[in-house]
Length: 503
Image (cartoon, rainbow, N blue to C red; front, side, top):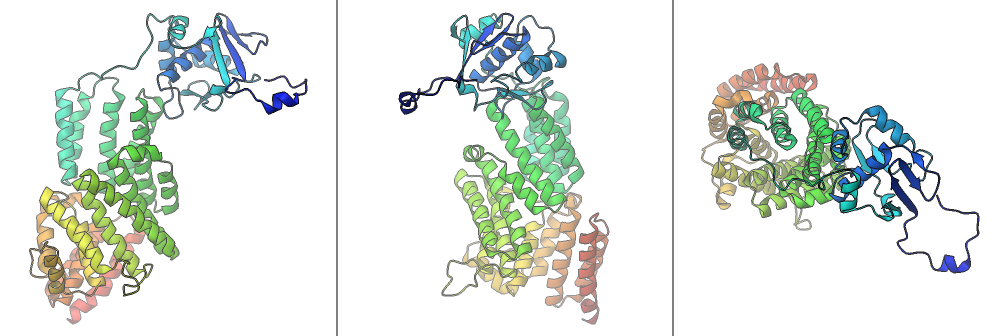
């Protein structure tokens, strides 16, 4: 609160004070005095502010790393408990003061709490006339020594580290149910009070749920991870990374479960660019999903500008994965870039290939990226329980009207020949390779794969196999919970079956 009764002189307007704090705040044993005004009487209020100031010096008490009531109580010596009513009454005293917005909270009585970084620089805090920093704050709070962040976390239990490593190995290879079991075995060995170790399990469980299309389980994991963000004592950097990963998984829920592309895009926009810049894996996940969401928006709206943005996002994700040496992320990004090019070509949202549009990607470019993804999967033994690459390949071949000989020539020219003699042979090999893990493949993937295989079998003159494949696709379609998807696959099967019978 600044005095405004005396008009400012021209000299004072010409030469404003540089970096002069607007408010002087004195921390007193029985209260708080702001700018020489009458003292606000409350023993807890100055200690709350001192605890938050000390936390802020250590990189905490910020909007992305707030302090819980328990953390503040630990900083104030001699307090057995910090009750909600005490906190609410103390903070209510600031309502009619210039510091009304200084302390922010998710809930005023229970927290977590952080300091308003816009107002904080305008305040000078003093204890007995000296700046309220460092050792002065520690003594004021009654601490024997300043509270500092631990130099190193305790050693993880061997059983936890081994089970987590086994889960990661299985996840990379698409063994989703065994990976989920490994995480269950790791859970009893999480160190008590280690929020980061608990969050690591939650993130992996959420990834498995997302890949299985188990949206209810993903929603449960997101709820638990959100509580960890709000109430845990994670270091600032870990909290920011966890917040970004939760936002990306929430975007997957909006997009994959609810079919809402625009809200998913809004969720992705919440991720801090600084966090993305510091983490290549996170940048790949973010760019990959953003590209997929923009692709569907572009197709739904018929918007060529969104189509270009989709390919740019997928290209950025692929670049990050390639430069960072992340084979798993690279094969995912390459496959999704390939599929996006094919879908956008089919929707006529990319410039037609020709002499005047040499830079415009087409079906052959899409196939080259997909062949790279296939080679990475074989080289690193990745995605053995996935049929997506084969689905993309069969779709692109049909879109480009390529027979298997033409596709094999393209693959051989790229140095990645396909180990098959026909589309039917290739599909049969892929189906057999994941037969033992077919329960881990979402039913919609199985439907799409079987129907595409049936189409190519018909084109290659194998009506008997096509009829059996359509029958299997019908059985898989009946397992789908999504009524619209179930109807779409059954209609496609109905369209194929008469052709198979006439052949």
